[in-house]
Amino acid sequence: MKTLALAFRYLWSRPIAAVLNLLLLTLGLASITFVLLVGSQVSRSFERDLAGIDAVIGAKGSPMQLILSGVFHIDVPTGNVKLEEVERVAKMPQIAQVIPLSLGDSYRGFRIVGTTPAYMEHYRVRVAAGTAWREPMEAVAGAEVAHTLGVKPGDSFAGSHGLAGAGDKHADKPYRITGVLAACGCVVDRLVLTSTESVWHIHEMPGAKKPTPQPATHKDHGKDKDAHDSDHDDDREVTVALVKYRTPLAAATFPRFINSQTGMQAAAPAVEVTRLLRMLGVGREVLQGVGAVLLLSAALSVFVALWNAVRERRADLAMLRMLGATPAKVAALLVCEALWLAVLASVIGLGLGHLLTEAVGTILQAQQSLPVSGAVWVRDEAWIPALALAVAALAAAIPAVSAYRVDVAHLLNSR
Image 1 (tube, one colour):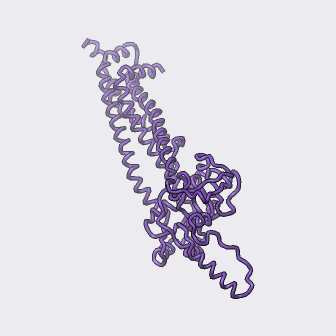
Image 2 (cartoon, helix red, strand yellow; image 1 turned 135 degrees about the horizontal axis):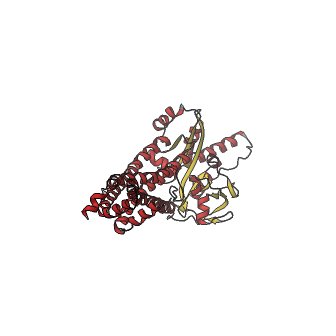
Image 3 (cartoon, helix red, strand yellow; image 1 turned 135 degrees about the vertical axis):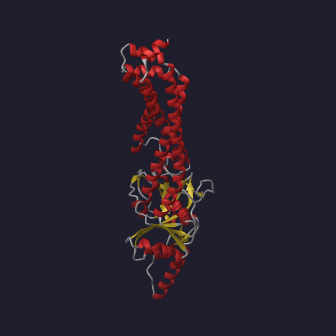
């Protein structure tokens, strides 16, 4: 304990050098912490939101744009597709389930999604307050939507045209909130869900609500009515559809069939997300490289500082030896100085990394994008203090050996 206390005093006897070394170590560790936190949360968010979705079908365009808009809701859609084409896909033997989504409006920046109850069932989301929608123009709010906007069952709101929340409001066709969903930690938290018929009704598309079938009085009248309903179905559109395969073999044939034989495109989420993470990985590697350079610079700076300290403190070291300190204890004094820097830099660097992550998460939350939080701790962070201690010990190794070999008799004679 005396060695640690003496090392701490020696460290701060040169405050400018100590602060500069501490700053370099801290910045390097904070950069690595930031990369670990953001990278792990983004990857986990992608995995959670993609769970159980084998393919996404929609209008032709960029496959990645289709995934980002239809699954993660962080991009604009590629367009709309005919409902009858989606229904035809749902009847294919290799398809287990198709969940249609209709996009285009938002409420104060949060997207309004027209869908079916199967979408909530897919993400296993339950209603925490109120009830799910039962009629057109009823909606439920995700947990983040309810928390941010303060909406509750019984409230009414008017959606805005477009996905940014800055378009014209549909004030003449308000929604009514019937329920608030429990937090799931998934994309549903930042969505307002309603029926597909509500979206059709808002945009004045034919067949906003399919007429209730009436008993046919004679055969010809029934035929006329069926033809009328079919015309309505032909005009209906959805934005994307989430597809689940009945068999793994469908992954080899289904996307090719959709892309070549229909006017739609099919994108495989696993493939597109892998491409996206590879592109994001470039930025991640750059940040990790910056952190590594800062740590290397810090190690060199600590080495120079301790090497100079050995030369400046030769008289002090000789006095310590005369007072009974062993060579190992004198060398430990130098190592403890470096370890003090590592401990302080680890604490400050981890804290700074979490603060940076929280700041980025706040910006992303304002844009209703991927959830990132500085309050999360990941397992890989445990390596950061170990890395700092290893760097500090390595930087102190040569100065400590030099202090260990101090010739007390030579120093006293030279004085």
